[in-house]
Image (cartoon, rainbow, N blue to C red):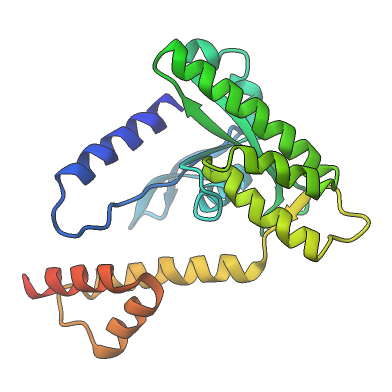
Length: 239
């Protein structure tokens, strides 16, 4: 987790130096704790040192959730249980984000955001935010969406609280089913859209050495917007 914060700090420094585009690069990090199979996998012709297993797949799902929730670093409940007793002494404060059912899993998982502090003033501020947020989250999970919305509104400067304000408003208009237990099921459509974006990114890398076709340019513009389109054309023309 400390390394994850160092990676985010390094990215912030890189964004400050970049001048290719006005849009800063962002990075989401997912962390999970569990057993994996690690080693050289493949054939005599080609070997890759990699990790595989159910826990690897779950970690990938958690990383994908950083694109849905306004959180840069998300950890699983397994990881939370590993660090909860030593977090404060390492300048880390975890807070619960949600209980979700991700694609490919039949059992819901809890996810947490990790926040860091540099001094006692920041520590107190984040601990107060954590208390207020998790109080509102408990109201939300108990289907008390009206009171939860009021509590989230008190800390609306927090991006995650603002995120939940929208969800509470949606549930007030369209309440979940009576057997709802606080678990949020992410739609398969969202994962398909995310996968499409990743695949398009791979395609762009593979054909960057040739002129982009008009159709691909339109596809980039539709999914990513003008900023990335202008940057991609710039890099292509420089080759």
